[in-house]
Picture 1 (cartoon, rainbow, N blue to C red):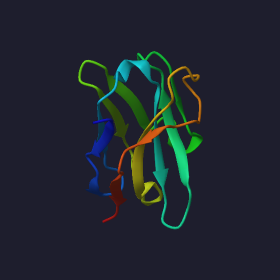
Picture 2: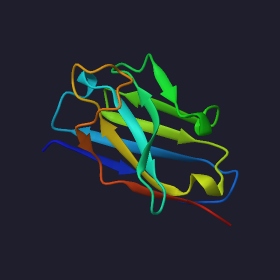
Picture 3: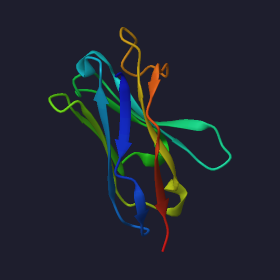
Picture 4: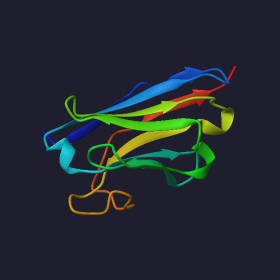
Length: 123
């Protein structure tokens, strides 16, 4: 079954860290660049970070630069998002997404989404 499954979300205090995971199955993971998105309540999903097929290139939205790190382990078919120095403004549902094969590694096109994982930053 072709799917992406996120995990690792939860409640964290301001200033804390979380590491999200996105496990892929049913397709050749290293054939696709991948992205993380997030969705604030009542808002559209917004792009957070992207990574190339083999992890050599990464890009971040300005609000998370220096705090978040996107990474992947192709042997484990898993994408990660290490989130540090979290603040209440990072509270959102986080989604991983697959970029279609053959698109540029920083493309905003997507063709497969996970179900999302809630991250709540609060005391």
